[in-house]
Every structure is written in C-alpha cells, then in structure tokens.
Amino acid sequence: MKKQMAIATLILVVLKFAYNIYRVVYNVQQPLLERYFNYAILFIIFYYGFTSIKKGKVKAKCKN
Image (tube, rainbow, N blue to C red; front, side, top):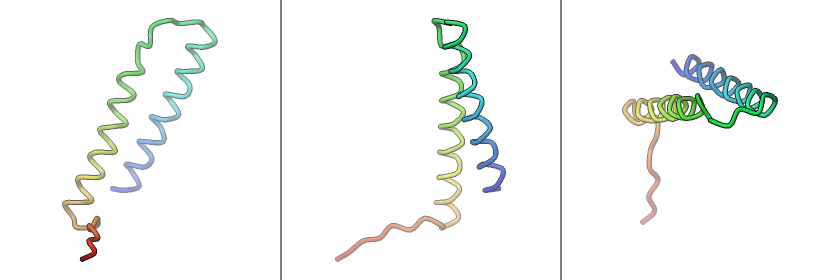
C-alpha cells in the first residue's frame, strides 16, 4: 500500500508541475486544476498518515 501511495503522490506532483508550466507558457490566468491537485495530494498524505497511526507505525516519544 505504501508503494502505491508513493506512486500516486509522485504522479500528482508531476501533473501539477506540468500544469504550472502550461499556465506559464499559455498565460492562463485562472488556476483551474490547481485546487484539485492540492486536495488530492493532501488527501493522500492524510490517508497515509492516518493508516500509519492506525497500524501503530507512528509512536510518540515523550521524555519525563
């Protein structure tokens, strides 16, 4: 699952980068898809974080 999440995030980042280049080259003023790219990347990061916490892979370190 971790590998698929990493691949999906990488694909979204590459698509966002390509879209930003498209906006600069063709002088598009409105960021049409940028909001959706950000939402998709945030969803993947939060989903991966919550599943890691749920499985117990992330542990808090407390010093007394």
